[in-house]
Amino acid sequence: MKEKEFTLSFHTGTAQIKLPAAVDSLGMSGTAALVDPAAAISDALKNPVGSPPLRAIVREKKQQNTRPKAVVVISDNTRPVPYKGDAGILMPIIRLLLQEGIPADDITVLAATGTHRLLSRRELEYMLDPEVFTLGVAVVNHDCRDTGSLVSLGRTSRGTDIQINSRYMAADIKILTGLVESHFMAGASGGRKSICPGLIGETGTYVFHGPEMMADPLSTDLVLEGNPCHAEALEVARTAGADFIVNVTLTSDFSVAGVFAGAMEAAHEAAVEQVRRHVGVSFSEPYDVVITHAGYVGINHYQAAKAGTAALRAVRPGGFVIMAADTVDSGGPVGALTYRTALQLLKLSGPEKFLQLIKSPDWVFIPEQWQVQMWGKLFAKIPMDHLYFYAPQFTADHYDVVPGINGARFVHDAEMGIGIGIGIGMGMGSAVQQFYTGALTDAATRLGKPLDEISVCLLLDGPYGVPLQQQKKQQ
Image 1 (spheres, one colour):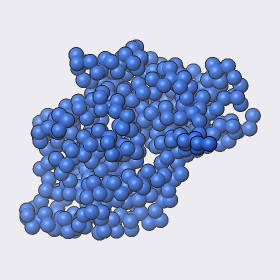
Image 2 (cartoon, helix red, strand yellow):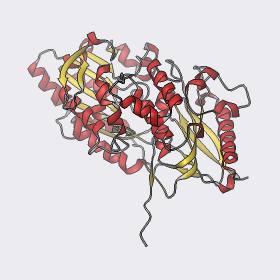
Image 3 (tube, one colour):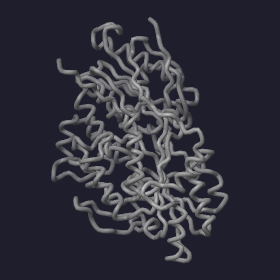
Image 4 (cartoon, one colour):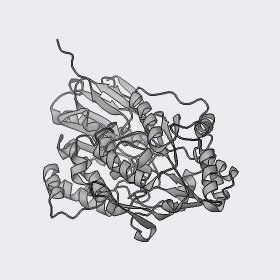
């Protein structure tokens, strides 16, 4: 059988795989990388969207307070934001602050971890330019469960408890940074999401990520207007305030495609428009089998849900999804205890009963149940045992927790159950190849058809592309 070769991008690098030539490959239309990202960053700071230049904002703040404090909010390690190197967006901001007389002691880099685990010093040093630490700039994590580090700002119109990181609120100069890409709940990442959920308290998720909001059909990729998740995040962010944002968009190989700086809403909306133009993936008919991967973001099973919700757009009801993930998160390849608990409930009860359960007035909200609810959307379309899932870092105990078929059964060499330290981009490509080949063959067998008689697609971009079914023209 003739084959085609593809390159898939994971958290730790790329893997080369071969699939039958008849497999349709669906990828984003893409956008070109900036030739000189450093120059684009400099220009964006000088000529922002809907805002005075950052330098002018800093000078105005100094007129109000002779020694203003500055905070620069960064994303955590689930987002490939360029924070170091020639395309790094962090040091140009810090250098500008220093040039304007803000001493390093008065600058804080704040990691917007949201409800994710705290990043280790080693992880922060890997993410950021070494100069940040050489200068003595404080680099700290937001901790959503540390109530002593939060300040209350009231409630939103929907009832969300607005508790925001107190270090952020105490700053005179508030700068947000991040990546704008399609997001399966909020429509798009970046902008207001640096604050909500990035800097909120855990109780703030009870409404923001509540079951009713997650079940809303407008809480989905590329939708901002009418999206309740976006609206809630925006209301929280407006309440907390932000003086300036620096957001980027990326190409499929994580090169910088655009730099959008300025007012929180205007600059973010400009970035979303660019993303809309290139992330859509067109197809005509749903597929029997969708092959995908969890991409850079899929450092654990929790994050891999984003690839699952993308795949459900392209798979036919009752079809099959085959997914590989690079679950290298030092906090564990599955996710936090609350996530694992809710996931077990989904696995035991099924998507319909699980949704009934978490919507019950007697249900006690579990943090991270929202991501399990997203998996439930996939399993409302295909049976749980129609998902094949493989992560080299998973052991048998991990597979017992997650729904779906244990993909390690198709891997016939020593490259399985290897632990957290090694990722797919670090020599694990052959194991991933064995998984895809074995799972695809098994799916065809269960369909009772030869491989060349079933429809199969590969989502080249995993969780990043948004499959969009083309409407049939009326005759």
